[in-house]
Length: 120
Image (cartoon, rainbow, N blue to C red; front, side):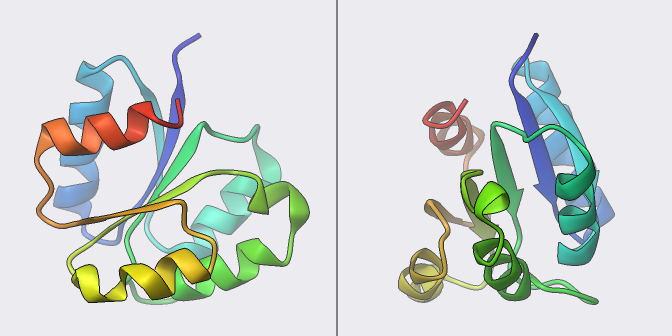
């Protein structure tokens, strides 16, 4: 069984590109367009090896996702890798809310795959 990743990204082109890259690298993926969809998914499916999370999304953004995830011990145990165009200045705040790692967009495929390999 291949390692599984949940991609949480509102931009469909970015979401699809990430899914293709990860599939080509041997990972199974599921996707969510916002934090609410991601939480719903996580509460009804086996835990993925890692959640790949954008911060800036409509409906429920990555910050809200991290805060809600923190309230649920089962979800809090799932590693979260933030991939955001918001900038590295937000890294400390994301880590303080429970993110396990932070990469700035655009991240190279090599850097992204290396970061994911730490969790899967």
